[in-house]
Length: 275
Ligand code: BT5
Image 1 (tube, rainbow, N blue to C red):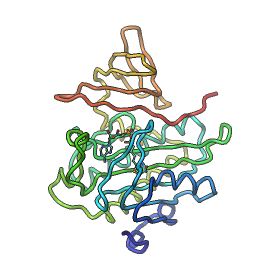
Image 2 (image 1 turned 90 degrees about the vertical axis):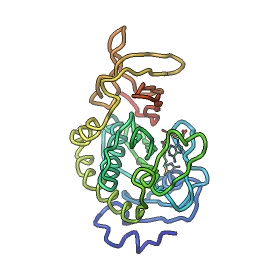
Image 3 (image 1 turned 135 degrees about the horizontal axis):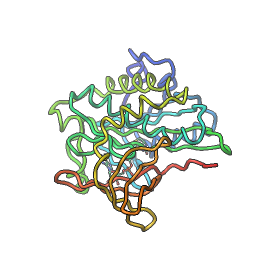
Image 4 (image 1 turned 135 degrees about the vertical axis):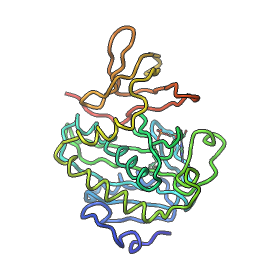
């Protein structure tokens, strides 16, 4: 199990990871962090575990892990942002993870709508962003990050679509180093988030977004829409050129025909109140 000292030793952040909750096993670090946040835990608090017994993905899906091999953590954020900007937090989460994955692996990473990070077309990192509002004001957001680090084998369902840093690089990684690099990278980006300035974050994301410019299919509330993914709108919506004109998507399932494979992803599922 991680110790507080080894995680904080050499950690150069002032905010992220100064308050640490460390577990050997827990149902979900996101669920725990949400409880902490609703009880007033401070911004930057991090919950980290060796294993989750009920790791959560989006829309009720699950996140698998193998004990002691991956990075599984959640961070509490309390930025003073308008609701539309809160909708951009998933891009902060995934652009930061993509940069870190590239830095430590030396391999190119891909940002897949809205916030998966892939290596060689396979999912290496998943992000679960959960936001809680008081009226129109963000109370807190919990940013959950799962990075497959040293896991080699995956369940049958995931064997074809998941990967890890170790699988891609044929070597083991020190998860403590990765933890420190991840938190430092997020803290650097977070200065911009606080100012509501997402430009550089979005540009990091777009540079790695293979979906843009490609033909995709969106499934939303039973409706199937095909078109070309053009760009992100200022509020993070996906702009799709369809035969009936341009449409903006905030939620739904996206399927992309990518080289040899079909990859499916789910768009943002946290709800941003709109005026
Ligand atoms: C995600 O959801 O990708 C969000 C995953 C977030 C996990 C972190 S770990 C720390 C924190 N605490 C939590 O409880 N959660 C967060 P989604 O886009 O819905 O993708 C879920 C799908 O990814 C599953 O249905 C599987 O198909 C696939 N999947 C599950 N485990 C995986 C893994 N380890 N690697 C790659 N793909 C996986």
